[in-house]
Each structure stands twice: as C-alpha cells, then as structure tokens.
Picture 1: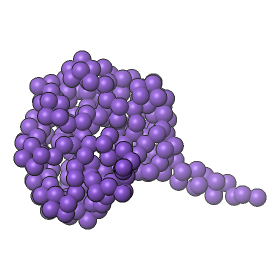
Picture 2: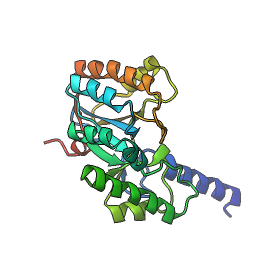
Picture 3: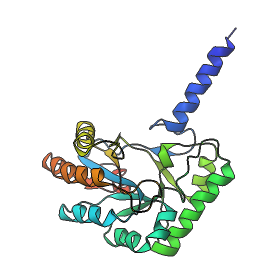
Picture 4: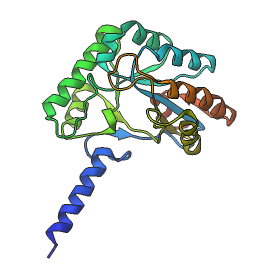
Length: 232
C-alpha cells in the first residue's frame, strides 16, 4: 500500500516543480535556453519600462547588442515614450503581465485578464502583439496554459538569473559569467515590479561589465526568438 504521506509529498514536489522549475511545461509551453550548438546568448530584461531604461538602452547601443524586454502593461502606460524608445531601438518585446502579480492561488480568469490587458496595451501603445511571455517572479499556475493558447504566447524562463535586484554589481556579474554558455537565456531587470523611478543602479553597472566580457569570449547576442531557431 502506498503511504498517503509519500503521495502527498510527491504531489507537492511535482507542483513546486511545475510552478517554478525552469524546464517545467506542466502549466504551459515554455523554454529556458536556446540551441546549444550556437555560440549565442539572449539577454533579457524584466519589469520595465522604467525611467532608468534609457540609460540601459545607451549601454546596449554602445556595444551593438540587441535584447528582449519583458514589459509590464502598467509600466508602459506610465512611461509610454520610453516603451516606444525600446521598440524603436530594435529590441524584442515580451509580455510580463499587466500589474506584475504573484499568480499562485489566483483564479484562471484573473491570470487571463491581467495578461490580456497587457497585450492590449502593447497593441495600442507600441503597435505590436508579443508572442513571448514571462511569468512575474517566474511563477506559473493553473490557467496559464489556457491564457497562453488564447493569446498565442510562448513562456520563457531562463538559464541564469542575475539576482540584480538585491546583489551588488560584482556579484551579479559573477553569477552571469559563470553560467554563460551556448544558448543561454540571461535574466536581468530594467525595473522593479511596477514601481515608479526604481533604483536599478546595480543592474546598469552589471550590464556594463557583462557585455564586454561576453563579447570578448566570442558570444553573439540575439533575441529570444532568434536564439530558439535551430543552428544551420
């Protein structure tokens, strides 16, 4: 006879993996890295746009690097001109929800509505309909699969997360450089949830160190969509 406590523990472990596991697809189609045969990396930024995003764009421009920005609808409506600057610079845009909620224990209708509001904002403000999404806090839940199917969104997790919201630049840089590899998807931030005028100095300084280091190693920077294409 199977002990009930073992069943419960197994179920809890599976749920935890589905919610936060970077390779999990339980709650919807998702990716966490690109083709390992190409010496390419996808640099991604969450929680923007913010008042500090233009400084990040300048650093990316200096190194001729294209990135993918997972933006929040509420932030786009707060600083629409900065959101347009990201798009005009040629960077890829992904859906990071409207209000950056923690979706565990939320109703599927709430999840669907929040991402749909963001998708509407992308269309009205930027004239784009993203095909990629990233769950706030990396937390997926019941209702994500249906939401992704309806909006045509592929989930994107990450290969390495810089923890740039709490670590100093040197530590962020060390985390990223140690884990950098072919096909890696790197997660950093150009905002802090939906906070106005967030302090992202650690993120900005870390990017200034990370870009030249990875370029010197011979990595090419691509968008998430590009890095998912098979090597030819």
